[in-house]
Image (tube, rainbow, N blue to C red; front, side):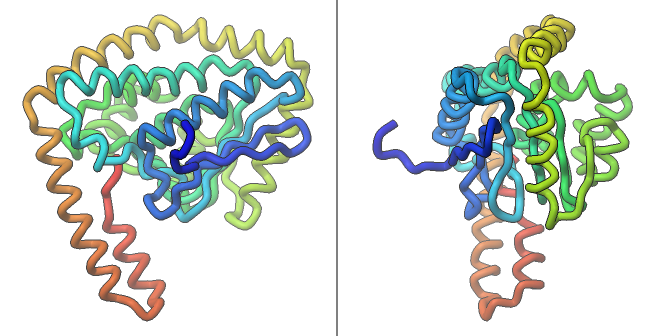
Length: 282
């Protein structure tokens, strides 16, 4: 929309469309504006016949800390339905893209940020990357997260990620089949782009047919997950508990910000400690 802040930047490198999350001051937290811009970027890539692949990446220390809690905490049992509908547009745009998607991930990928990555075809991660499904820490059932993770893990693995909200390291995620490769941080963009260009060089008709078949194999679960998320989120948000929990998290983060400001003087070690203690987004 005209006049809104640009949170997603697009570039083109040969036949690869690069889609960049660009909200580093908020850990690339995903709000409605970023979500809408991501959908637009993916649709434009889908419609451009010159584009044969997509590279999804982000600026800043973290790929994405997930859903913006300042926005998410304002939802109720009615407005969460609108939020889910908009969220479904992003999932559909990622899932239905007939061109290969490679994601380059550094730092934390939490909640919504992690779920978005699970729609990529291949993930390249730096050694510091972590992957976490953290909704339970806010009292929010991870229906979409579980539905998206199920094809790539066991029930025990799913329980560890969903119920314990444990963060997977880059190597753990590689062993679990979530991450394709772990590369040095300095080489992340270069290696991910090389992989995206390799996939872009494949026959587009064959790639599209394979991706359509992948989707058909998981279609029933995808639709069931969407229906369950709609019903469950309405019930849970009607209690007010997630909103209260998120409000408390936001209050704690405000204290973290003040502490970081008090550090001052460019002490990177202490700033890193404060940043890692912050969990504004899920």
